[in-house]
Amino acid sequence: MKNFKFSIYGHELATRLLGKKVREILLPLIKGTNSEKIVLDFEGVNIVTNSFADECLAKIIYDIPFETLKSRTTFRNLNDTSRRYIAFAFQRRLNEIKSPA
Image 1: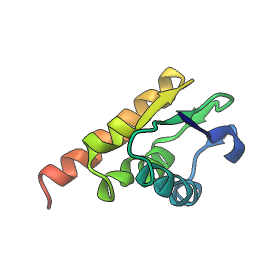
Image 2 (image 1 turned 45 degrees about the horizontal axis):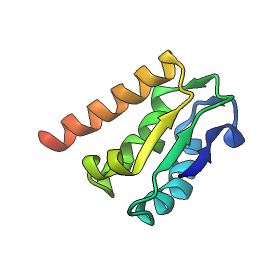
Image 3 (image 1 turned 90 degrees about the vertical axis):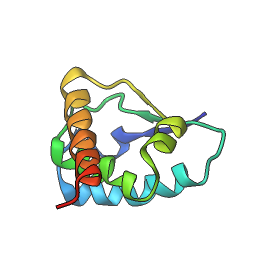
Image 4 (image 1 turned 120 degrees about the vertical axis):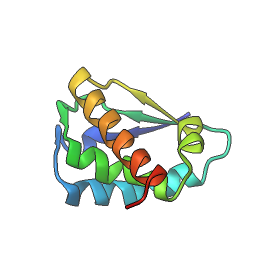
């Protein structure tokens, strides 16, 4: 397993700009693996906002199918608030894909 430490980008992951920057680093790592899981490690991160979660993580499903993303990644050390924001961001993007405007 490869470990991707979010804390190197800060303890409060809050903006879309930062989310996009991190996604551009993370996406090739996830795309480049077939069997080795990427551990999305949030140790030392106090908060992941909805904006960051959407930009960094949920938008990945436009490049990689959600089921593939789930099979190639695992989350670690997420607090409850950040977990909710991430889940909400994914749900919103999945709903958008299922029923485009």
